[in-house]
Image 1 (cartoon, chains in turn yellow, orange):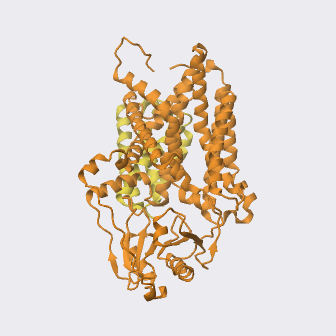
Image 2 (spheres, each protein chain N blue to C red):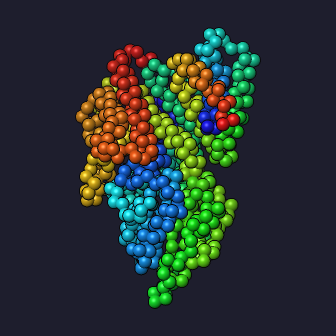
Image 3 (tube, helix red, strand yellow):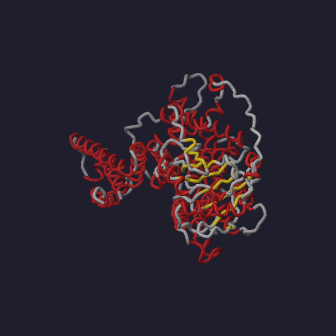
Amino acid sequence: MIFVTAIALCYLAMLCFCMAMQRHFRQFWQREPEPFEQLALRVLGIALLIPAWIACGLGWNWPMATIAWFMLLALTGYSLLLSLPYHTRPALGAAAIAIPCSMVGWFL
Amino acid sequence: MAEHVADKPHSLTQSMSWLHTWGSLVCGWLLFAIFLTGSISVFDTEINRWMRPELPQASVSQVKAAQTALKHLSTNFADKSNWSIVLPTERSDELAITAGTDESWRAAPGSSTRQTLDPQTGEVIRARETAGGNFFFRFHFTLHFPRNIGIWIVGFLGMAMLAAIISGVIIHKKIFREFFTFRPNRGQRSWLDAHNATAVLLLPFHIVITYTGLVIFMFIYMPSARDLLTPPEPPVQMAQVQDERSERPAPASYTDIATVLAKAEAVMGELSGFSIEKQGTPQATISVRPVIGNQIALGTGHSVSFNAYTGEVLKDIVPVSNTQLTNRVIVGLHFAQFGGYPMRWLYFICGMLSAFMMAMGLVVFTVKRRPQYHKESSLAQRLYRGIESLNITTIVGVSLGAIAMLWANRLLPVTLADRPQMEINVFFAAIIASFLYSCVRDAAKCWVEQLWLLAVLLILLPVLSLITLGNNSWHDSQLVYLELTCVALGLIAAFAARQAKRSFAATPRRRKTV
């Protein structure tokens, strides 16, 4: 179950980084991003990376967790890369699932 | 890509672009096969299992399985001096024993007797002979050449891959700004975007896998340093085995295997098997081996040795030096035996995406040049035709070979002589057939048709199992997972076939240039 949390947190972090890009911010909010909004999203993304790494660490030992963390970031980023240029709705749907998943796994 | 202008000095980007394009083209065909079979061999034990469905699902503990095996060995092979037992593990349900003499042990594999046992009853199981997942593993680092030649060829290709990665990074300088750029529906630009984005996101994976892969055989590629630092060892004199058969104590007086295994497990983690050397003599020793994936550092060669009669530890695991540990960790990162099934899946998906990235690169090469084919000389046109053919053969053909092997495993008669070789023949026959078909058929139609064939073979695999095995098809969850994965891959192949048909049908006018 902690693996699901790790995947969810990595996904949310990558979603923040994507949204911080002008091209994708426009897709979600239909306007240009302010510089502080881009900064805030990037900071939020970085902030989410840390619990993602901790979640990996709880599922494996720390060295293996770091390796898995890198791969999960790549794969979740890739899923966004393939979906966002077409529609934003799958990404938002996945985020809606990811947010509860990211919180539940800590307790199970 | 830079036009070759003889009197103008090339910038670094232009040179790297030339190197990346042509080097990747020539080496990419084989590298795709290497990455594809490498990803498949992440699950080599599971494929072995699927290819021998006669094996029962093991539901006994390792200790019980060990006791069953020892009972069988002492009943039937009491006179053999070497026993080896492979225990059921998390990945593999098989309980196998090998029994032989010292001579047959050192000789070619197969000269000792090898049997698979039912871990519950101890009776011998005859499962079909198969090339198994091990074929993909060996193909991955030898390309089915004789071992040393293959290792050299794959090593050369690995170095080419490193060159491709570095040249790719140099070309793609805006690596962080265009981190997530993918603009679909723009023909050649989209293919390039997809290739770049996949390569960039998986860049750490590519670098680690390529580098660690080369390190595995580094002493074959660059032996000089070690040879200079370590003098060659004098040939070891094999000690004459004392003939003490007359005083042989009965194997039944061996110590309780449960305690031995428990002690070994406490030190090494999950166990994979054990062997008894000098069996039947007073010097008999039990060597217990761990599963090689208990930590990142590859655990091959680790063992704990016990006196077979008293259970006392003769040789504990030797702590490795830091140099050796570094080597084992680097190699272990490539072998991907650690971290359990979640990690295995991560490696599999990343590996498949890497192979896909290479496929996209090969396609970019042809897609970019297709609009200009009619302007080229006839020799160039023939060469481009050959390149299109080879693209189809390596990308779809090798995949077809892999799935055809699984089909052959179910369809070939179980009692066929030399069955493993026949399965391998089917693999290569599929690739050759794919190549011949791509030579005679128009590239556009060929892509679509072969992708559909691939999709059909993957998706119908469970149906094949049901027809050939009946109720016995899914008695083990591993069989189910493998077939579900194939169906999922088949759906992806079907999607690709559909997209290929659409994009070939679109008019050339739709494709904007860069």
